[in-house]
Length: 170
Image (cartoon, rainbow, N blue to C red; front, side, top):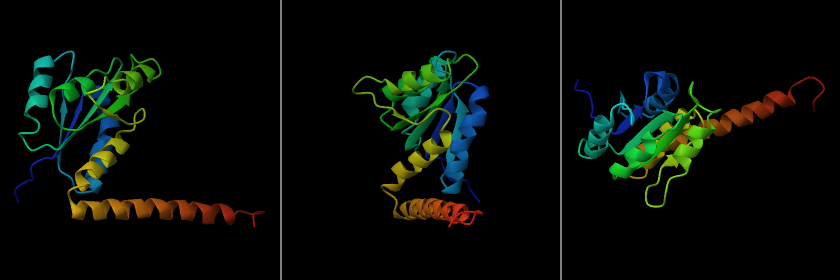
């Protein structure tokens, strides 16, 4: 069977970002969304970054998830080049100041160059957000998102039942 073309691009500045960014891939897997994953450094491979961002839409991508630590220029630079929505994942890296430098670098984009920004190391949320963006034009995917959200509600209900069953609780 032929593999479907990816519709989400997951990129990161370094292989050290992979343990965080794999969480976006796992979220996309849960919804059956095809993706590609690559290392694209804004600082070490700027030509590759430009080519990736410029060709993303014509290659069929619909959303790009870009993770970066430290100065975290990758999400903003990609967003400045592509017409696609970009979701930035700030990553607490070895050269990071508790992750705040990454958060602020991705969050503080100038008007006209938006980057949707998730919490520090929250690549899972980036994957879910990418799925929700795509679901706005896919009824089947929208149903999967609704089922996922219902499961979250049920987990909270179960947690409430568990804490009420503890000894000394009524």
